[in-house]
Image (cartoon, rainbow, N blue to C red):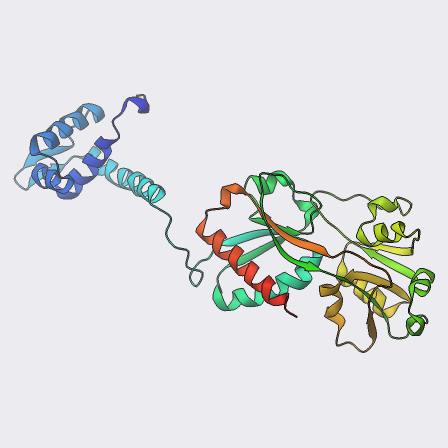
Amino acid sequence: MNIAKVDLNLLVYLDVLLREGSVTRAANQLSITQPAMSNGLKRLRDLFKDPILVRTSDGMTPTKRALELQPIIRDVLSKLESSIQPETDFDPATSKRTFRIMTSDYAESTLLLELVGRLSKLAPNITLDLITPSDVTFHDVEQGKVDMAINRFEELPLSFHQKVLWYDSFSCVLSANHPLAEKWDLNAYLEAQHIWVSKTGFGVGVGIDPNEVQKLGWVDAELTKIGKHRDIRVFTRHYHAALQIAKTQNLIATLPTKVATIFKDDTSVILKEPPFDIPPIALKMAWSALLHHDAGHIWLRRLIADVAAEMNTF
């Protein structure tokens, strides 16, 4: 049998007939005439090659075949009804949804740390699956396999929705015992040894060539503009590693300020302004058009934007 040739309204007729056990009551339930329902029953009998309902002393009694069909038809219709209903409001207090977010170590150390605390109060049953940039492609986000990407992007596909969450300046982190801490200027900065840390965009990263200054990012690009370069001894993709190395070794980490201030109360480190200009960077949230109108997704995007706005005030 070709399903394309079946009038799917007959499945609705069958569902109501089996629940009501009466042609008359089924017709009233569906607001159609009794002759129309009787014709529907005839067509159902032809379709399934079965009487469906048989008149007995107890009234209209479903056949064995009809009883086998009843739970199947009810399940199909229930799923169909659910799928075509307008999306209900998302209830964060009861939702058990998992949101997959591609995020950099920078965003994890700052924004996501605050977000987790907020979620524990507003949506205690929601789960976050945080994925590194190396595990995700643009295609994954575009297809909605990943709910959103939060990172510092140099460029994004035009099909993506995006929002700037904040702009961040740079700060230098160095040990309080660093020999150059007391004579802080550009010459001291260039005399010191440094830790490089960054990971933007998507996809699997490759090793760094210290000689390819144009690929080293914002800090080194600005140094190049003034004809200078720094001595980088360690390359890492993890901000916490950079912070710990700067704290315990005589190396300087030049990091986004919101990361650097993780150590603001630690007396064993010092935070310094870079002795040259570095333009601020933008932390962005990007997501697929496929999820743009999803109620749960809208709620999470708004929450993330609210948390970011509050964090941007301190």
